[in-house]
Image 1 (tube, rainbow, N blue to C red):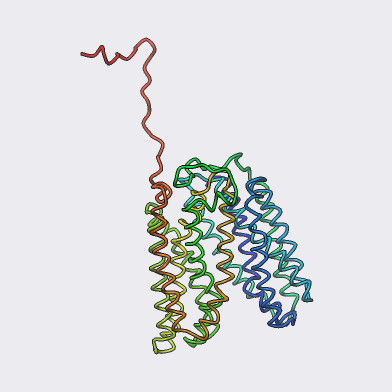
Image 2 (spheres, rainbow, N blue to C red):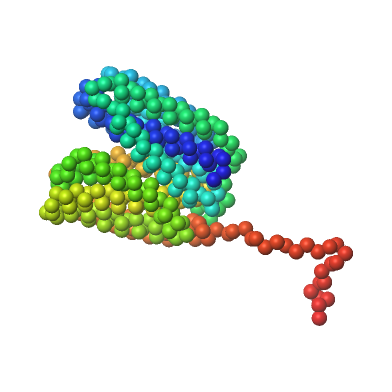
Length: 432
């Protein structure tokens, strides 16, 4: 990677490290430490998600007009202020307002960082850039969660205040690091055109008329709904209620998920970067369908408690394998579909779809996982198979290079022969 990419990746990893300090403990902090009750904690988590839905529709146009760097710096500052305010809030109003600022800031960071990666990479390096970002963010989240867990004490609110101060400092570091990046004047998107060959200017109507991008957004919603939207809600409820595993086991399962991503990311990258993106996504759907079947055995297979626990941990690990396959395919594909004037809007639109899935997923999966374990498993096996079907359909809308970036032309290494001026090459007609 070049110096600009290295700095962007460093800042991204540090901000993920800061988020890992607080996100796993946000519910406990509001409900128990500040003694605001479970109802207020639920409202706070909902506001955190809804704040993202409120700002993302406007983020893309700001990125395309002003550039990703100023937007990222402002979002980092907002997230830092929100984190500090949340750490010292002890009332309902101040807590809700603080988490709204924090949620809005962190939501804007995603498309801004993605656009900076696009601008500082080429079609040949973009796949590995996004894979590296996903790897470092998961590593940062995992380490942050582990370290934060050692610092928190429910009986000492000051320990949680410390966590939020550390999170705020990480956001400020991201802003400072990003501000030192020398961005190119134009994005490196020579091959990024829609499948129909047009180059639209900008606007929501243009995006909605781009069939491949619309199909990718639908596919993205199903991906995030069927996986990420179930981790801390439906799958957790199913594991504790139907499978009867100890709640502490969920922490081990999430650690297994992160460990698989960290260990397998670059091994998987070597296997998938020269294959069609649509086929890789299709294989991910099959892997996740198998993961849900394994989860079904944990809760419905009437096996021993040990087997049920092992099955749930294996489910999270299989999800991690699928995530490692998606990181070098989906996000770079969004960039490669985007016209030069709409990189930020395409990234923001996909981030908005992701956030919608993360908001709907827990609302649907939580009650089903706890009360209807059989239908819950069947539903998400079908959703996972739907990922495979949608991915194969998307492949028909992509150009060969969009679907398989390794087909992009490689500069020739042949050195041209230079003849002296007095030794002119004979013309073809002179050769007998």
